[in-house]
Amino acid sequence: MIFQFAQPLFLWLLLLVPLIAYLSGSAGRKAALRFPATQLAQQIARMVKAHPGKFQGWLRLIALTAGILALAQPQWGQEEIREEYESIDIMLTVDLSSSMWAHDFFVDGQRTDRLTAVQSVMNEFVEARTNDRIGLIAFAGASYLVSPLTINHDWIIRRLNELEIGSIEDGTAIGTAIGTAVNRIRNSDESDKVIILLTDGANNRGQVTPMQAAEAAARFGIRVYTVGVGQSQPAPFPRLDPETRRPMRDRAGNMMFGTAPPDIDLELLQAIADHTGGRFFNAENADELQEIYTEIDALEKQNIEVIRTALFRDWFGIPLIICLFAYFLDWLLRTTRFRRIP
Image 1 (cartoon, helix red, strand yellow):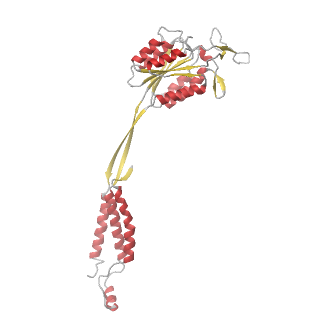
Image 2 (spheres, rainbow, N blue to C red):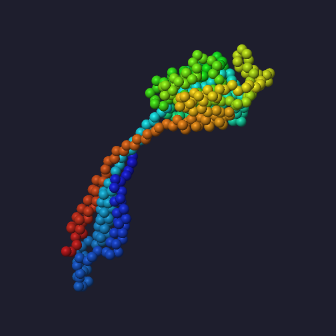
Image 3 (cartoon, rainbow, N blue to C red):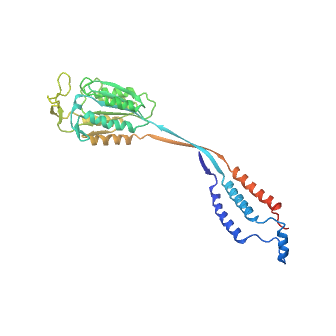
C-alpha cells in the first residue's frame, strides 16, 4: 500500500496551526461585557460555566488542521510494477577436440587444461544472463546438440560441466559446428540471436566450410562471436594413449607431459566474426578469457522496460468530516452550553 497527498503544497499551511494556537493563548478572549463593578461580575459568573475556552480552542485547531489535510487530498493506493524483458537467444558452441587437453591455463593457481578453464568462465557467463535463453553445442570432428535453447540455466551449467574431451570423434569441424548452431537458433522469435564459438584449432573436418556456415548465419541475422583460446607458442600437452585418446599417467598417477605447437587459425575466426557482424577475441590465459566473456556480456545487453501503474483512492472525506464536525461542535457549544452574554 502507498500513501500520498495529491496536493502536498497545502501542507505548508500546517505551519500556521501552532502560530494561531500561540497567538490565541497570548491574547485571550475579548470580554463580552465590561462591568463597572466587580460585585456584579461575581453574580453573573455564578450563572455561566467556567473554563470553556481551552476546550473550544482545541476544537478550532482540530478543525483547522483537518481542513488543511482535506485540501491536501490524502490518497491510499497500490502501485503495480511490471518489468518486460527483451531477451537474447545465445547458442554456446564448445570445442572438445583433443587439443583442448593442452595445460596452458591456470585456475585458482593450478595449471589445468583449456576445457576446465572454459567451463569455469562459461558458468559465470550463463549465471549472469538471467533472462536469456541459452543452448549448448559441443563439437570436435562432428557436432551434437547438448541442450536446446532454454531458460533453465541450472540445466545448462550442469550439462556444460559434464562435457569431456574425447567424447566425440577427434578433429575440428568449425563449419559443421556453426551450421548446427544456426539450424537450432534461426527459427527463434527473438530479434537478437547470437552464437559464441570457442575453439583452439583450425578447421580440418566437416563437409560445410566455416565461411559457408558464416554466410548462413549472416543471412538469418545471427551474430557469431569467435573466441580463440591457447598460447601462440608450444604449450604443455599430456601424452595421449593411441587407443583411448586419454592422457597417459605414470605409476604415481601423474600425467605425462610433452609439448604441442599451436594450431589455431586466428584469421579464419576473424573472418567469421566480421562476416556476421560479431566480434573476434583471442585468449592466451584464464584472465583474458574471463575478460572476453565479460565484454561479450556487456555487448549483448538485455533491454528492460519497467512499467509502473498506480491506482489511488481519495480519502479527503475523512479529514473533511472531522473538520466539519469540529466546527459544528464548536458552534453548538458557543450557542448553547458555553453561550456568551450577549
